[in-house]
Length: 335
Image 1 (tube, rainbow, N blue to C red):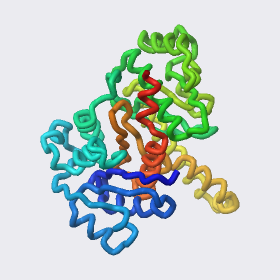
Image 2 (cartoon, rainbow, N blue to C red):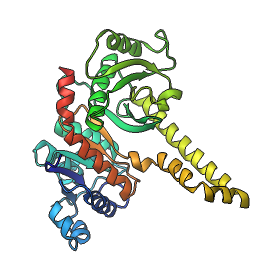
Image 3 (cartoon, rainbow, N blue to C red):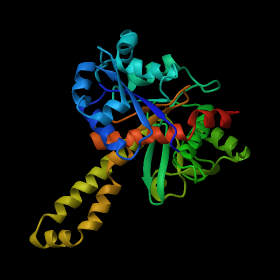
């Protein structure tokens, strides 16, 4: 698909911005000629980075925003800056149909609140969900919610199911979403009432757009038997942080072990390709980008500490979301 895609970018959000933002855009434009960017931020800083590059000048429009929402600001403080901040203007660009999707590496809480204020919720959805990518043995999982909602009702979990399946079909259109609810066991009798009610509803109401697989336990998330995992934001955020910490722990321990002695370094040398594949599989930059689901417009959150490679991957996610007509898929599923 080569239709023009316009992405609104909060160019001032996250660490080392706008430098990593512009470098990430450069990486993506090498293979994606149909992408265009509305860059919101301090025009003098951004212009210094793109003025000497003809391709960037062709593909990027700079909209000056003097105010920046910092990571330590509360959502209320961010809202008080109103339409003067780069984050607000990027989101508003989606509302005004000037951009098809917005991307920010800035303050997560502020991004959620401002997105709800500006775009509002899809009719019938009570709470948004933060969904992200999570590798498994057979490909990729979608996991939601990752922290937008500490407590969820059975209706929220059911809504997350429909939205998560829509996101999966947008990113991986050739595959069937296989839904499971994260629980402390696989038996029907386990879990709290909200989980049991959501399970009962999904089991009794068959939907053609996805296959409901029941419950999944935390130690089976990466097996690949299911690919959309639904939970509340409290549990999902803890699971995500635990997985990230475990991956870093394993990678660091392996690295130390393989460099401990002369013989281990020889083994590392002859197995360089295999070890590189192992490291790449666990590289969080490859899965950078989480999306707020349930809004009347797609908003993607990049990790604030990622580099240009990670930011480039969040741009690629934006491209797939737009091409997959995510919002239309969600509304159809809900109906």
